Image (cartoon, rainbow, N blue to C red; front, side, top):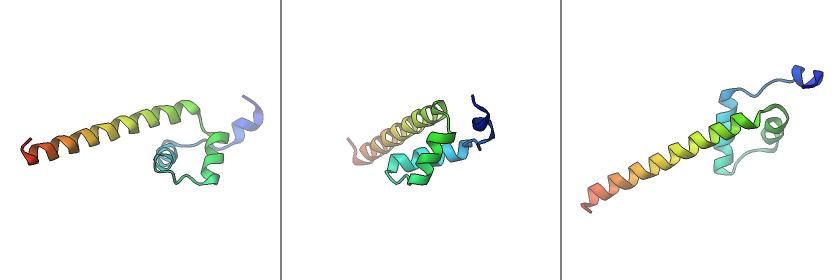
Length: 73
């Protein structure tokens, strides 16, 4: 790690979640994208991306089960 890297602000967990959600929706702006690549850690974004993907799958599965139950299928 270089000296200049230590002085740069880190991307917090809330900002990581916001960036990943914006990316999922396709609305990530250029400033955040550049900030994420300059100051963020890939590991954090990968972990949050996997968690959000699993939550999305669980929600879709739950909605399908609910609708199928209501439809009597």
